Length: 397
Image 1 (tube, helix red, strand yellow):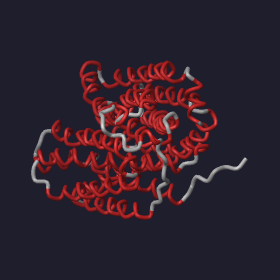
Image 2 (image 1 turned 60 degrees about the vertical axis):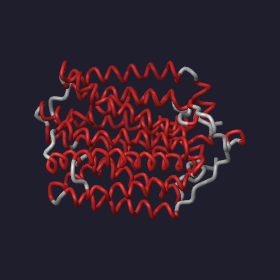
Image 3 (image 1 turned 180 degrees about the vertical axis):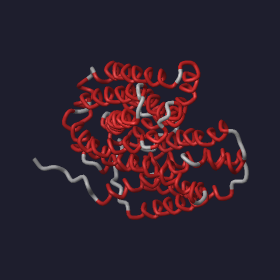
């Protein structure tokens, strides 16, 4: 059977564009708190706000992109996103106080939301339908690599040079991304006549793709489990005296994703989604359980591998599913819907989980999160899994 070509020039370019956007995001979010504390002598909570409020901006950027990308044009929207991303990255050099930093973080997040939603929409049109899961998995590796390289390089430069060197690097990276859009060819997707030019009345479907909402809700809940790790692993590893092992946690996390995602992607395309989704739920839950029981470095790093196998592959598979179940001409809206919900969960989870930790402690919190992820698998069954015709047949139409 003839297999449609996946690794085209445009697939590689749009994956690199996504890497540039996420590299800048991860590099700055891992170092901005240090910059805020050192530069403005602010509290850790306010420094944390300057980091996390970026996500609020990203949600607004995704909302705008999802509503207008099909009207403005996919490539034009990507140009707009990278132009705004470049300007807001450059403006960090001129920040003189904390309120301005917070405002810039919101604007920077909005520009990031436009960039990442545009690349997600474009790649969905480039990937052959028969290789949707595999292609989305490979594309999502650009985010995984950025999440591993960005924080590592950002912290290294802050410790051995300065935050300004970070800014120079990120500005150059975003500039390359902006120039790269010029050589990207974006397929045109015809819209139904009824949808063309019909923007007179407010309609929630202009901002949210209903077909993508169920899996997006599940992704928002699953994000609580991941951000319990991302937000509190440093403090937890200090408490259990495994700081050195903790510093390598996301290395094993990323390595597990790099090794497994191509296989998981092909498996997704063959099975239609259900088997893969349930597997990722259980792997993620087991990783959180191991984390709650970690008393030595080996178990902590093993937990990182299972969290990567679980959450890392859930995210790419869920994104592929959100696109598959949505009309082709609304892929941009489906992508923005998925990431709006995912970002929303990311934005509130550290605050909610922080209250839990104060009451029950770190170990117990991770144990609760393991059962919470298993509960999400039940939610998936009720909302999507038991409707096999919807997940399998409709997704391949």
